[in-house]
Amino acid sequence: MLPQDPEQQRPLLVGSDHEEQQETAYDSDEKVLIDRIDEDDAENSGSGSDRVPPFSWKKLWLFTGPGFLMSIAFLDPGNLGGDLQAGAIAGYSLLWLLMWATAMGLLVQLLAARLGVATGRHLAELCREEYPTWARLVLWVMAELALIGADIQEVIGSAIAINILSSGFLPLWSGVIITALDCFIFLLLENYGVRKLEAVFAVLIATMAVSFAWMFGEAKPSGIELLLGILIPKLSSKTIQQAVGVVGCIIMPHNIFLHSALVQSREIDHSKKGRIQEALNYYSIESSVALFVSFIINLFVTTVFAQGFYGTEIANSIGLINAGQYLQEKYGGGFFPILYIWGIGLLAAGQSSTITGTYAGQFIMGGFLNLRLKKWVRALITRSFAIVPTMVVALVFDTSEGTLDNLNEWLNVLQSVQIPFALIPLLCLVSKEQIMGTFTIGPILKMAAWLVAALVIVINGYLLVDFFSSEVNGVLFGSVLGVFISAYVAFIIYLVSRGVTFSSWCRQPKSVTEAEN
Image (cartoon, rainbow, N blue to C red; front, side, top):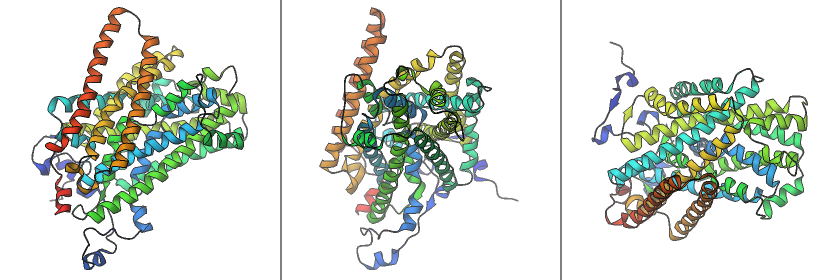
C-alpha cells in the first residue's frame, strides 16, 4: 500500500488539550534546518549550552526570510497611499518622521521576534494561555478586525493596480475576485517549502524596489532637499494630519502576531541558550536589513510625489485611485509609461500583502482558538472575512469615486483602535522573566519600548479624536460612542494592570525552563 500524504491523513478539524495535538505555527517537517556549525567545539569548551557560535554568513542566509515577509506590511497599499499623500501635501518635510517611524516599527518587530524565538510559541498562542477566556476572546476579535481592515485596503490596492494595467478594461470588482484567488497560489507555494515561499516574496519586494526606483529616476528629485528632509525635523499645523498618518500606519497589529510566528520556521535547539541567542542575533540583522529596504522604497514614493505635486492645486486630491493618472500627466510616457510602472509596483505591493495577511490570519485563528485546520480550510476562512466586505465596497466604489477616500479613513481608524491590543500584550510578555527566562528585556529596552508604545497610542488617539469630532453627529450616536470609548479605555487599563501581575502566576515555557536548568 502506498503511504498517504500527511495532509490527507489530518482530519478537517482537530481540537485537543493534548500538547502533541496543539496548534503550532509550523510542523517539525516544515521547518528549515539550521546547520550545527561548531557544535563539537561548543560542547568540548564546557559551556556549550551558553556559548554563542561565531558569526556565519551561511547561517545568516538560512535565517534570512521571516524579516522580509514581515516587512511587506510596511509596503502595503495603505502605506503607499500614506506616502504619496505625505509627499504631495507636506513635500520633503516628513522624511525624517518616516525614518524614525520605521525605526520604532523595527523595535516592535524585534520584540515580536524575541518573544517567538525565546518561548517557542507565538503571540496568539501565549495570549490564549496567559489571559482568561473572556479577555482572550476580546483580543482575538480585535486582532481579526484589524486584519480585516488591513486586508480590505490591500485587496482594493491590488484591484486598482489590475484596473490600471488592464487600461480600465477590468473593473474594480473583478480585480477583487482575481486577488481573492491568490490564497490558492499561496497554498501551492507552501507545498514547495518555506524557502520557496520566501523566495517569491523576495521577487515581489524586488519588483516594488525596481518600479518605484524607476519612478524616482523619472521624477529627478532634489538631493539636497531630500537630505534636509531626512536630517532636519519639521512639523507644522498644515502637515500634522499627514504626520499622524505616517506614524499610525507603520505599526500594524496583525504584523506583530505574524512576525512572532514566522521566526519559528527555523529549527533551533531550545535547550541551549547560545542557540537561542544566535537565532535572535541573525533575526535582528535580517529584520534590520529588510526594514531598511522598506524605508528606501517608501522614501522613493514620498519623494516622487513631493517633487511632482507639492504646492500644486491638486495635491490634496491625490489618492491611490488617481495617482497613476496624475503621474502620467506630470511625467509623460517615456520609454515605458509611468502609469504602468506605478501599476506594477502597486500590484506587487497588494498581492504580497494579501498573501501575508492570509498567513497572519491563519496564525491568529489557530493560536487564539487552538484549531488545527487543513491549510485550504484556514485560507478559505481567512480570505472570506475580507473578500466579502471588499466585494461590497468594490461594487459601491465603481459608482462613486469619493467612497474610497472615506473608506480608507475608516479603515485607518479601525486599525488604529486595535494597536494597543497587540502592542500591550507583547510588551507585557517580553518584560516578564517567568515567560522569557534569561531573554527578558532589560530596563533600558523596556523603557524605550513602553515610550514607543505610549507615543503610538497617543498619536493614534489624536487621530481618533480628530476623526470622530468631524464625523460624529447626533446625541444618540455620540452617547453610544461614549459607551464604547469607556469600555475601550477600561480594557486597555486592564491589559496594562494584568501585565503588572503576570509575574505572580505565569508559567515558564518548557524550552526556556530547560535552558536554565
